[in-house]
Image 1: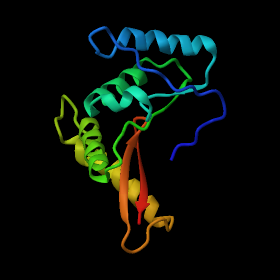
Image 2: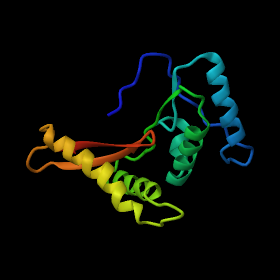
Image 3: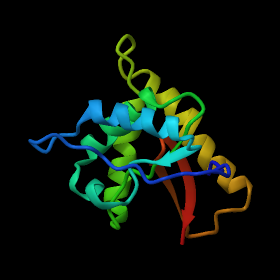
Image 4: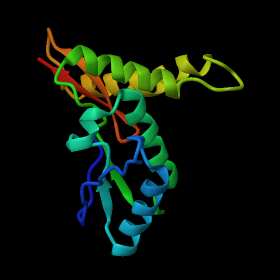
Length: 153
């Protein structure tokens, strides 16, 4: 998993419009405010308050927006899932993979390369580091716009 550098990392709130939609202009202004205040990074799309009321699609859209609009040099830490249910987490990770394995020009052909490059490589590194025992399941998780792997006993 990616290491978090030392510094100030507040938990980002999610602004909403009067009709309970994500206020993307407010998100952009909030990112600028954090930059002016000199924070090193933010915890976004983490397991706090309003995130539990957003659908997976809304959380993914919000994370993409934050990543596209974050100030240069600012770290983003995000988990994105709110379920304790392993099956739900698996489905969300699959959706993340499918979302990132599609190209408007080439269609789904990049999906195989994406899976080989990211999923198979993560699993192989975990196995080679003796991080997996007989009977374990390798869990691939999506967080902070990246995939990670861990053994589940």
